[in-house]
Image (tube, rainbow, N blue to C red):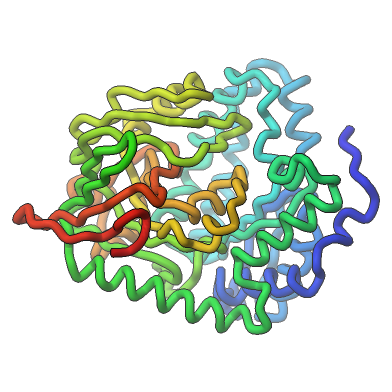
Length: 418
């Protein structure tokens, strides 16, 4: 049984935690009067769950339904459950979530578990459970990836996560440090975080406006270990910050966020690229990734650490070796400046330009809310059970926008907007 020093949560500033809850409801979700909310979180994050529920009801929420997970229960499954159970997942739960989303229920996820929780468990069981879960989750994931409803992800400084990030510190110190890092990255360490987010969204919209005006056919990346051309999907649209969901509600899906992103063409990626930061995936740290693309598909993949897990991920399905997202983040982003490796994609992807293997977002197409899956595929959108971001940006990476006529425009120089 995991035990922690007493009063560890006392190290978390209650005023800032309450601001985070308010931002999650008002900015992240922009929850509407009468709208229900489905909330998932680790049990350790109950202090934030309770504050979010209060702010949601104050905003006029219909019913707030929390679903909690627990690290000890998760570990008990891997250590004591029958082998056959790892090929199954609670499809009834995800079908119910999909039904809720079809009824315009908003979705909020709190992350905060130990990112290396499963590092000591059988990787074969972990891979089987992940695949079964991904398949069962499809009905709900389609509503999220299709941006049918307003959704949001925020973070809570769980003790086990904090100890991974600040391994040399006592639990109480580690939690305090992670809490402050989360609050800073989430822009709730200021007097008026809602206004701060309005200003930040305007800056990101300025970037997406410029990129959408340029209509680049491709992006060309060069740097150490990297010479990569990413063709962009036909009719792609850059997004960033606040976006309008299909239900008409403007929301910020990720808090924090520093990225602008769009959809690559699944068949038009050529060259090689190396990761610039480790990828923490299901309890495994995958580091020094190096892959080579031909006709949009990864044909060669290596990693100094976690290579076997990387190759299992790539073999998930036909779309797992192709890209579903390309995102631009300056090296000078606040999360990059912090110098912290969070072991969590919500944060680490906002420290660096990145790409994502797997499923694309339909909202990253002009008129994407009206496109069928077949039309999205015809325009180059990728389909997969996975969507995994990994970092390829640094202060040594240059990016050119390539127009349809072959002419080039500097987009990034030494990791910064050109």
